[in-house]
Image (cartoon, rainbow, N blue to C red):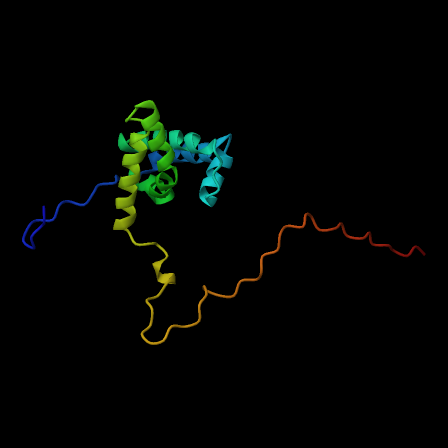
Length: 172
């Protein structure tokens, strides 16, 4: 169905209002992601270096968090502002869909999938907070390629620096 210019606009999606009471639940989610067996898997997800055992662990965890959001026990606005559920879904989708097909369980991680679509709407409706750092391109020839400044070369970690030499004093 195509919307005509005079048709009323549909109301924008409601992602909830964040209150101080939501902090405890939010902190519990953060603690879960950054501790125990989920911490290394979540870190690998952020680096796009997942290992085989990470996929279902994370998909199930995001399913559980999504249930909280979709049942309005934590505002989606808080969750989607802090986490990229849409991007996490994109990374885990193939494994979830394969397991759904294998088991015949079409409901497996459905809340995570729904939350990912809602997160995509949330992201699309809000420009990046740091958009001021990226001014519009000036007209004319483009400048040299690169970022916001020259970065020093990255060196692999070489361990702790050597211990300082003991200072010797003269005894008189």
